[in-house]
Every structure is written in structure tokens, then in C-alpha cells.
Image (cartoon, rainbow, N blue to C red; front, side, top):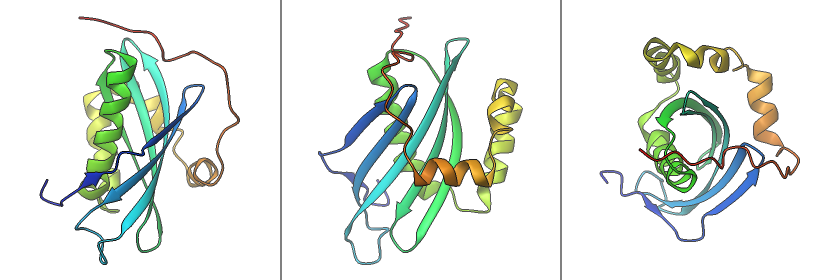
Length: 150
């Protein structure tokens, strides 16, 4: 891509019920010293009318601890495809969304799909920081495993 993003193979995906915690090693020309930077992506998902609603809380360790967050909706196809798509989109969005744009991005999504409103309303600084600083307890829940084929 334009930013020279490159995912290294040892991406970890840990499932916590319907919460997902990604550790991504990203090598990017966007980094000042071209070093490999770890990115922690916290994802909480919900399935509503065969649409997977994902809340991303992205912590990017490049310069400072910068927490970026955004919502996206995608059709629910298969679990594996969804997770791969979420990860790729999250990495792309890290570099597309700057702090002042986050509110506009939320507003645009909210206009497209009002089913996001319940999740948008949950976004608060305390909740975001809480999720970012500590992982949820491991859960054996199988929610999110349903497969939908078109």
C-alpha cells in the first residue's frame, strides 16, 4: 500500500467470548524509525440481523500511547473470513483516521445504519480506557461462530 504496511506472520488472535484481542506486529513507512511496532486491537462484536457490528479500540505504540477507536459493520459470512477482514480493516483504518475525524466517522456510520446507535451510545472515555488497559476474563462462549453462506 501507499504507506508500506506489512503484517508480520506471527499475528496472535485470542478469543474472549465475543471479545477479541489482536496483537499485530506492523512494519510501516509511517513509523519514524521504520521499527516494528506492536499494535493492540481490542474488538467487541455483536451480531444483529446477520450483520457483524464491531467496535475497535486500537492502541498504537509508535510515539505515545494513542488510543483510536472506530465502528464498522460488515455482512456476516463465515467466522474466519470476518476475523481476517476485521484485522485488515483495523490496520488500514489506523492510518486513515486521525483524531479529529473520529467523530465524523461515527456520525457517517450512524446515518447509514441506525442499528449502530446502541453501540455508539456505549462509547465513553471510562469504558474505552477500561477495555484498553485490561483484557476481559477468558470465556468458553461459542457466540460468533455461526456461519452464514449466501
